[in-house]
Amino acid sequence: MARSKIGLVGAGQIGGTLAFLAGLKELGDVVLFDIVDGVPQGKALDLAESSPVEGFDAKLTGASSYEALSGADVVIVTAGVPRKPGMSRDDLIGTNLKVMEQVGAGIAKYAPDAFVICITNPLDAMVWALREASGLPPEKVVGMAGVLDSSRFRYFLAEEFGVSVEDVTAFVLGGHGDTMVPLPRYSTVAGVPLPDLVKMGWTTQEKLDQIIQRTRDGGAEIVGLLKTGSAFYAPAASAIAMAESYLKDKKRVLPIAAHLTGQYGVDGIYVGVPAVIGAAGVERIVEIELDDAEKAAFDKSVGAVKGLIDACKAIAPNLG
Ligand code: APR
View 1 (cartoon, helix red, strand yellow):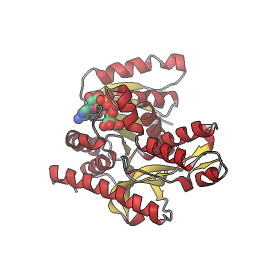
View 2: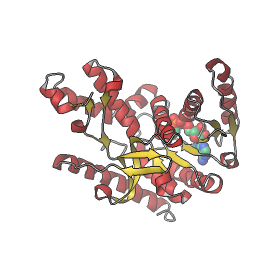
View 3: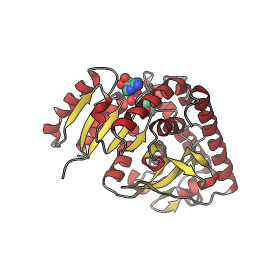
View 4: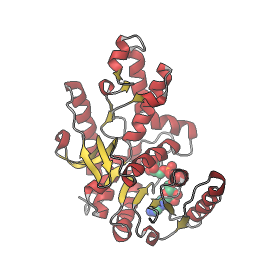
């Protein structure tokens, strides 16, 4: 059977890490595409030269034309600019919206059957714009945010409890931004929900609140430390988990930015919700009951995403 093909649009920090992880996990052949000539070619060659040492078989190539995406099974989009200290994800909207329009057209032309994962920020608005610009079916275009946000939450919780990261699950809803909604009662250590762990004395409510705030600010914490760009290892690992679930039809239940059609009372936009990812793309949205406080926080987050999409529509009225 022929290997799967993974197209990476954007060969920057996240793009290079995606290529390395896709190689290490033998997910398929990888083509890196970027507008800066030489960078995707150089990174692809460097990565290919690591394959004998790491023992993976994959063809890694670099390209400066969208044609290279032809026949891709998965396309992961990181094209655009990352934020610098002091910037919010929303500050990137003008620049990255134009990039999404170009990338969407390229995917529509050369990889219309691909499962597309958007990472470019501000995520919930950019994945919406990419879907509009590409015209692909909504269940084949998703955004990566929730896997990353919940991974950050899981890591901080595992540190707090002194337990393996493997045994901590976390549930995060809403937009990828300051309004994201971590849900403690659906987050567990080996099945024990966080509120019970507070009652058991494993942590305090105050400490838990601090961890939730640190999760919300997780991206900004890294930007503040790096000063020259934003996080790339954990975002890349998160998108690879989504790509793997699609390519292997694993049907993992992952928090993703998905196109909603009435679920959670939201219609026609992308917001972070848990979903089953399999060979058909987004196969099912997991819709849970929210209590009043959770619903209020979710609605606030949806409002923020709507505001960003309205800003996109004002800049590019042809979308939507
Ligand atoms: N088409 C293709 N590639 C492009 C385009 C375009 N129109 N515009 C920019 N790029 C490329 C840049 O040349 C660069 O190599 O996108 C790449 C982005 O890489 P980095 O600047 O290293 O950014 P990275 O850290 O990978 O983040 C990319 O993901 O998490 C988000 O906020 C982050 O929006 C940012 C994106």
